[in-house]
Length: 259
Image 1 (tube, rainbow, N blue to C red):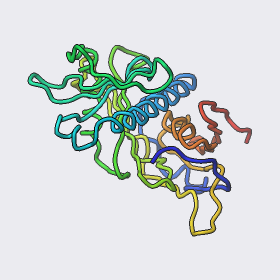
Image 2: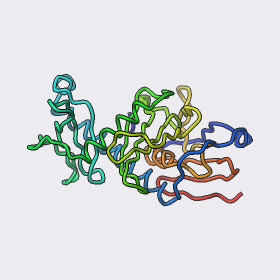
Image 3: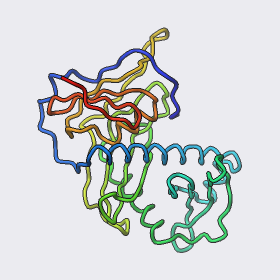
């Protein structure tokens, strides 16, 4: 499950004195406006894929989709179209389209099942992200793939996910920079050093948290996955970074707190 209700209380992953224990490994860096946009676009894609899956399965049972060899999707047009793929005679092809043009997901069967080169590349980049996971943190992994804002290739994420609505998966996420044809990993960025799984409440009568405090050692700026998680769980996330700064991430808004 992904959709989470509002929370109350505070959860902490670790204390700030731990910030300087390890030097942050080099990962690809983006500026704050790019980070905010990436996190927002990731959320839009993830929500579109989630609701499209529900709409598709409401019309076609899972067993039917498995028999048809439907095995993945790509999200296009800024979340307005989710295209589910299946195995064809010559490789992956379009199986079902879910359009949001009318505001609600509408399922249709494409007349032309052929994929464009860009669609094949986007799908291939997502497969590379899943294959690049070395440390599994969640019950499953979701993928998000979008055009690289600084090049002609792709950015592909493998995002740790869970079916437990009481958990927030802050760590375990992976980002790849992938070539334009979707076949080659140019850079692999582990976006955390641990799984960093946060429980929103403990015990039968425990209050739920209304904000989260974490430390992050891979970057001096909050990551796009933190923006994504704040949007997904509708909760402010406070980040301590290796330079001993503290940041507030509230949805797709990021601000640096005064020391």
